[in-house]
Amino acid sequence: MPNTLGPDYLKNSVWKPHLFDGKVVFVTGGAGTICRVQTEALVLLGANAVILGRNPAKTEKAAKEIATLRPGAKVLGIGNCDVRNIENLTAAVDRTVKELGHIDFVIAGAAGNFLSPFTSLSSNAFRTVTEIDLIGAFNTAKATYDQLREHKGHIIFVSATLHYKGLPFQSHAAAAKAGIDSLTKTLAVELGPMGIQSNGIAPGPIEGTEGFDRLVPEDIRQRSLELIPLGRLGKTVEIADATVYLFSPAASYVTGQILVVDGAEWQSTSGAMNYYPHSVIATGSQDNKL
Ligand code: HXC
Image (cartoon, rainbow, N blue to C red; front, side):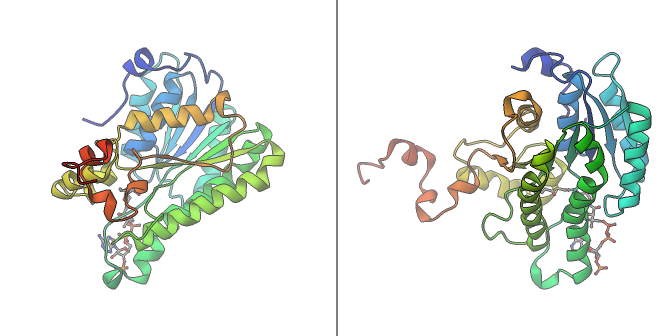
């Protein structure tokens, strides 16, 4: 069962229904867990969407399922779209404009990742991941730029916290995400004068996502909870809500920012004191020793 939002999102959310009526969102990696729930929230709030992926069957199935969330929603699934290939993206933009009219919002979310120590990572493996993540993000911005400019649009890059400090087995993905954050800020400055917003969302450990489940085995996951100040994994709905906030008029003056949604996980790995149990950190005492 995919980790999806479902129609209850509207019942339980603080957002106004119809917030995104008339908007169209273009999402790379839209059949993956995180980008899918981001798309679902926007569609439930009135947007139409196009999701892009390499696997046609998976992408088209996800598009059909998302479309069922709201009567009248139009959700296009475009498979065989590899973000490493800008021609794939420009063709997808042309088709979106033809079928859905225009593009207001873009989510650059396609990513590839696996665990590999530097010592066994090949040059081609490093290139493959940085091409999907970083060059794919650039290509997505480039291919959608005319639409973003015409509609004073907003692009959100899906980042991570992998590159904030040293993280083993992630030299490829961390380097790519560092580049994505740089691109986010540069585009905010270069495209701001045209009315385009450029922001990032950096999810922390989110339960039920393909990436987290595959990269973080159960025993490590349990131990990692000790370093998350909020004491739990994040939920996909929390990434959806961050996305809705950024695209909403409430964030109309926010650009060039990377919104970290991680329960303060990365902040809590600064040094030895972080290893005190949460109960001690919260009360400031351990048998009056502090
Ligand atoms: C070492 C590996 C490897 C592995 C592939 N390679 N998997 N090296 N360990 N596990 C190497 C290959 O040997 C090859 O190098 C090179 O990488 C290219 O591999 P291909 O299989 O030809 O590439 P491709 O088919 O394009 O597949 C890309 C991929 C794949 C990244 C390798 O995993 C993929 O398509 N992933 C998409 C889905 C995904 O990963 N989603 C998760 C994103 S999660 P050589 O030298 O042999 O030619 C995320 C957030 C994580 O990003 C945050 C968690 C906390």
